[in-house]
Image (cartoon, rainbow, N blue to C red; front, side, top):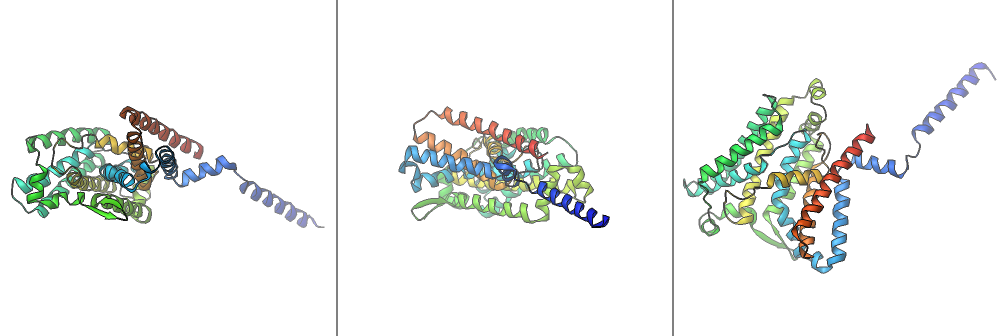
Length: 353
């Protein structure tokens, strides 16, 4: 055998050893971590299924009835819509504390334009949607163009919109009876229909449709990839040709539009137009997003996970209520889930680094 043959044999052996090293079995923990890294919605899905099984075993048919399961969807529809909007901002490594206030003032605009100014209800709804979008765009401009911190911008906007809401409406509630008699379309997202013995609302359909549409956009469009890129590393995204400012403004504007839809759904849910409703939507939306596995550091997570996160809160709330437990247990368990979700996100990021 020649020296060349010896060299080729040794090189071939080295290559096989390298290939064997790269294809080695990472073990269960390694494979599980890889699955979590690739599919962020997996953790909230596991928690959701586990919670349903546990409460189902404890409560039996009381929990598994079509009424109880669809009641969960009806209860989380507003939070689910607002959380979908919040997800877009958090994916860019920002946060929006004004989402609840935007939803409420959009509903007030719809109601006041209809009953105070006598505009057709269709035009009033469009005005409410446009107003929410405009507030979101202002947030985006201040964050992207003025380079102000998202937390400070949206905290200030929350206070401004909240005050404007009460000043404009004079703290006046438009009652359900008036809406039903003169402008029933304002309550359209609260209309109910039966499907296989289960009762759904139009708002639930809108929530699910929004989740599906946003999931597709984020996964299969250039805009969606830009959102993730900006959240992961805005400087690298800029260097690769992404217009970071335009992306951020569009994200906040879209968030405002979706929050305005939530405001319309809020009218359908409570039946009236109240300036005092939805005061905790900002906190509840962040809760659903964090439990749903979207990283507060941006660039990782999915809208589907946020949907699961909202359902988890709904399952725990209804399950504990049916068990007769004190409401404080719900807050305690949700608090534990929030901390655990952040810890899991940190673990995934640390091991992936």
